[in-house]
Length: 362
Image (cartoon, rainbow, N blue to C red; front, side):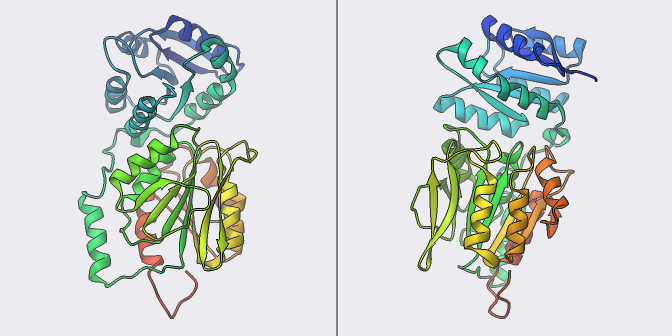
């Protein structure tokens, strides 16, 4: 079996040593080198041609983000960021994902040796996922937000058609690896009066609030972390808080967000399955399901439950997915009504959830 060849880039000799040890303990991967700054890493990439790069953000001689941006333009390759769990660390990590990093691991600020050792399973899992990731699109221009001509044209089209959106409809989105950009591609294209959107993205505590804030600055919708007991309103998008489970319930005529500290489902917390199962149970045929890029099968069976309850579902296509695991599983279970890239999913949602008194089913 061909081993995954990993190059570690970090300015800390201790972190380089720990990461190298963690990687070399695996039977399916090996650390082929360790660089203490991006300039050294550049030469080692040319010489060693690694399969995956682990990259620190704060380093001497060249910032990790600057290096990542140049790397993804000139030689796109799978990169797993090693970031610190701070407010600034979360903001920089979101930028790294925008630039094309496949995923990230949060480096503990204290107890470094024990902390990284405890994270070893997460680190090697993400390296394995990154090795299989599709990074071809990472060098393409990233959609920047509602000022784009396409997004403006979609809103003008809706206005010209006199389009009104049903207040009964709800949109449910689930994603994992690569999902932050796919979710953004959808949300920034939706009008301000669109039905409520509920989102579960696999992400640890400390990062989802920053993720929601970045989306709020780009989208016409009001985007925020979900709060337990909060009423779900049109024109809003609600992001599952990291480290919590997120679902929906009903109280009379109102839908409510339920956020609770519960056990992981499919190894995830938040889990897409938890959100989608509640959509099938509570919302039924007034739901639209969207399953995006990610490894594994979280949400695939629950998306089928949504379909059986009457929802209309979209699944991200393989060409645009960073990792096609979750979408592939959903398709295999017969949960997908349409398979599209994120931009086309947004367009399809706009047309599908318009008010139509002659057609109750979405």
